[in-house]
Figure 1 (cartoon, rainbow, N blue to C red):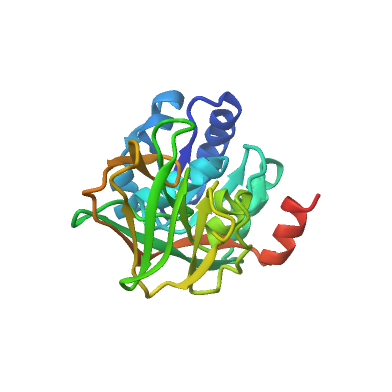
Figure 2: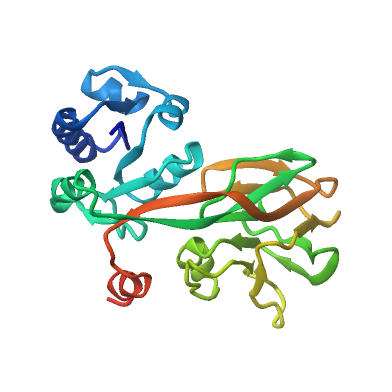
Length: 270
């Protein structure tokens, strides 16, 4: 088996854990460290493009941000080891990392597929979203005026800080914090959630993944931006054509059997 390893290089604890994993996996196949990690532990470096072509499994060491980075740059199954905060997307805590890797080597695991969102801006396809796409004001405390359409039909017109379009995976992230529903990952739908809307009737919508969501920024808005998974950004304007729908690509996670509902209880209700 070919292994890729990705971690947050600024976190010393994560780098130390990644180095331990690198050494362990050398006895169980080819191991490729992503460039930023490789520079920290002085081993051969591989780009995300290399990992996407050659790795069978990507091991991430860090928090949810590291997982989202790996999933946005490759389509490989991710085994996520939590060294961040809540680590909602992670499969194991750091102390169980080697035990988890041994289970993968033994073939004792499942691969869970989750929806991504396809994002097209002015005819150009942007990186897929694993958690959410946010159209938001670029200036703090300045209101943004939006119209939201589903398959060409107007569903909402509002002034707000912005709007979130989230996957089921992202339903437990930013969308949740603005009052969006928790969605089982097996549901083929997305959430359209207003972000601090100045309108009492503005509420989240659940929309099938096969429909097109179009967001129009109205001319009286201030500067605005489109953000994918909190890391990829593009400036948008009233002239921008923003269309979001379900992607043909999937986010893939290595799982050992803990249910989504159990994870919600453990991580969000403690």
